[in-house]
Amino acid sequence: MEGQGAGIGRVLVLAFCVAGIWSAYITQGILQETLSTKRFGPDKKRFEHLSFLNLAQNVVCFVWSLMMIKLWSRKSTGGAPYWSYWSASITNTIGPAMGIEALKYISYPAQVLAKSSKMIPVMLMGTLVYGIKYTFPEYVCTFLVAGGVSAFALLKTSSKTISKLAHPNAPLGYGLCFLNLALDGFTNATQDSISLRYPKTSAWDIMLGMNLWGTIYNVVYMFAWPHGGGFEAVQFCKQHPEAAWDIFIYCLCGAVGQNFIFLTISRFGSLANTTITTTRKFVSIVVSSLLSGNPLSSKQWGCVFMVFSGLSYQIYLKWRKLQKKKKST
Image (cartoon, rainbow, N blue to C red; front, side, top):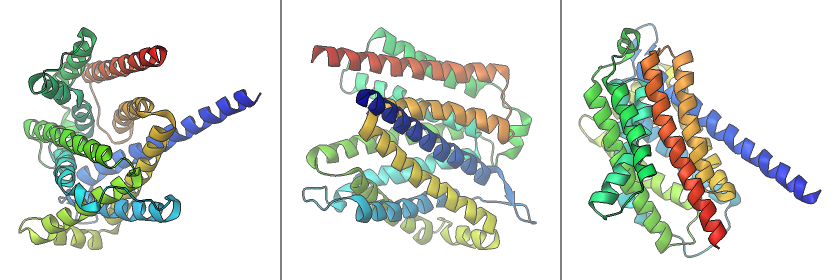
């Protein structure tokens, strides 16, 4: 009975994590799309300074991680010094900014699909730079994802969706998304290196260090750079409180979502987290299509299913490898 109770408790915690990740990031996706397409106020102005979202996200996540460290973390020595995050934060600042900026040129579903193809640059780098050999099923996954994203990009977007974009330009939008993926790869590799060198570093410490440097970089870019647009973004929020509120909720969703990701990884491992976040992306596309007026054609839905079939197969292959390792040990 005790084992059964523990099993039920574990399922409930997993369901709690799924609900938290889905609700936080689906809401954030809706707000991101709203901020990039909506016209605010009686003057019907767009919020053009989407890079400001990156700065706002850094500030909210920095404050949130500081609160979590004060409330929950025990004081310990041996963690990574905060200066060690300076290089990873450069790419972590530029990459997400490119992903957000892409929403001026392509639709939200297209952006989600493009950013779901993270495995493609990883495998290319692994093959060309490190000489890693992948299995045939892994190449099948890559083909499904790459084929689905490419076909979706080549298909004609509906005029209703195009009319909502600030500056429709598919090649530029997809290019920004793929640059985002490449920079994310460097960010993740650097974070892994920091964790290996300083094993006592907690997830909250990483979140604090990354967002501290991210805030510094974005403040310099937004307010010291001639065309940063920070002052214009603040002025827009003063004139349109609705936009300011959307930005705050957007950032809060990101901070809460990171909490649930940390909880999922610590309790159930990275594979469970990958599965939850992958399915969340698919649901985000469905929700966007239903609520935000981005109608997808039957061919485009075929591309969506093609991409997520490849991602699901990849998750299955990872699960099978994990099971084999458990049996061998």
